[in-house]
Image 1 (cartoon, helix red, strand yellow):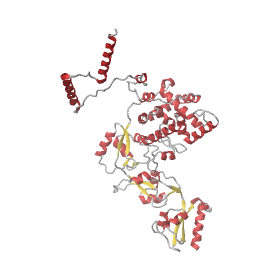
Image 2 (cartoon, one colour):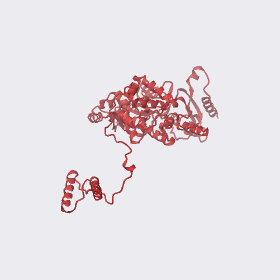
Image 3 (cartoon, rainbow, N blue to C red):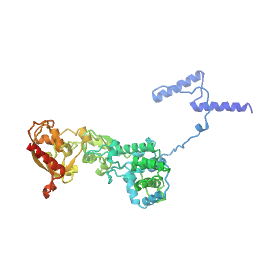
Image 4 (cartoon, one colour):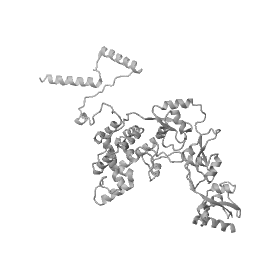
Length: 503
């Protein structure tokens, strides 16, 4: 038996070597022939020759922890996207009466859940992909259910926008452009990237996903102060310990309730629509400005579906310099490219951008660009009783002879600035020493471009002492109509103009 045991161990080690290298070491001519045969097979399969790598050195024992797998690999792929989300749950569960209350609220509204989940089907796969790529808990993909019911056009009373509900300032901090032609807070790719960046940063700050979510809703400063206050009082600092507004108090319970329903819909008598575990959309590059309606037509996609995938395009045209990619259903991208190449209808865009040279009424701007006032107001969302300030970017009809697309500066930075409508009273004054277009514009709070236009000079011009200067100073229409004096600022400007004119 003493002889058999070492012999058995030797055989076991020999077999281990075979299993490790995939072949037993050989010597002599037969080994050479075998090596040539293997190399030949390798060359025929890949076109390149290689030598098998055989580990050298003595065998080393492995520890118990190295031999024990920490995870169980699931061989079967997820049946659908919901199952994939369930497998990636990684946040601690919250147990509270508020969670049960929200579970009951959602489960007794099956139509609402169905609408939300059907709407989410366009975006969920991309969000889950991004979460997995960042190694983040996949239940965060359900957060837009709480924020916006997965409506990328949602706008709150506090001016938060998009399915991730970014406030304007927070959106700018995370590089979400907001201008006259697009709002990236609504953009599917950009807003998701920004939201996950923000959530990762918050988790890094607080080290807890529940606190990170509270900060996403309430603000990181508010959560930080609440934690500091509890620490000073010797109280706990978890999500349930902090004193916070009711909206934030309900925020995580809402997400937990939706997570529980998605985790086990049958337990809540809920039905989730099938969402396949594959991409819904593809990105497609565009090189020219193109009308939204035409892009949808070339892709053979209903206009509403196109807008749902490209919600940041708030105008009837997509400016390629600012939005070089569009999203299309994954099976429509090739159709769009083919139809675009075959398109023989002439220009792709029937709109362009026009900069207002001076402050003017919408009716005057419409006359300059050859549009009706109603059309100009409608296409640019101009409300009544306002004037368009100088330098504003407006979308106007594109002439048939204009071939140039809108430039990158206008597409990325165009803003529409409006001011309350007022009657401009013509005032003549004499320039003082060292007066210029810029100094008078600053003094009377009008634009340098307006002063320059009124006096037929350049915006950098200076005036001679005593030279007559023409200004049109605002007087509110209501004050004139009712015979009331102009507001204090307007009175100061007119009075100063009168004093200067008398000197």
